[in-house]
Length: 103
Image (cartoon, rainbow, N blue to C red; front, side, top):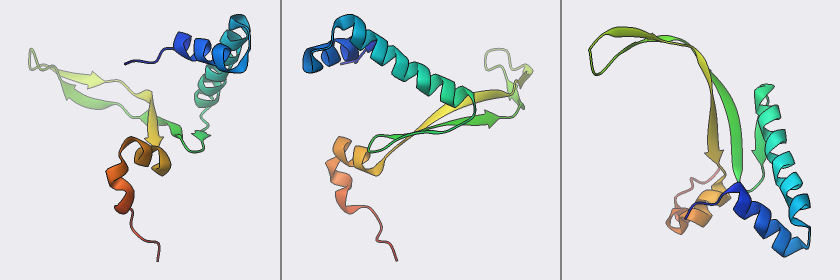
């Protein structure tokens, strides 16, 4: 099952008593803040969920797999996500004993 922004808006409206229009503004504002923060080069960390980062990838040589022609892959910025340990455990309880002890 895929969760959409509309699903989040409806769930928020149902569980908090907000009007659908208000929940839409809240969800849109939340994602706008994340986008703006990442675009400015800052990290977004959501405790208990994970961390979003921007990585700057430099240009590099590549090859068109269909034609074999050499091409330059342009420099770009990509968003990465790292799940928090508690989120990973929630998704995969078998990992509970796999965390190394701090010494």
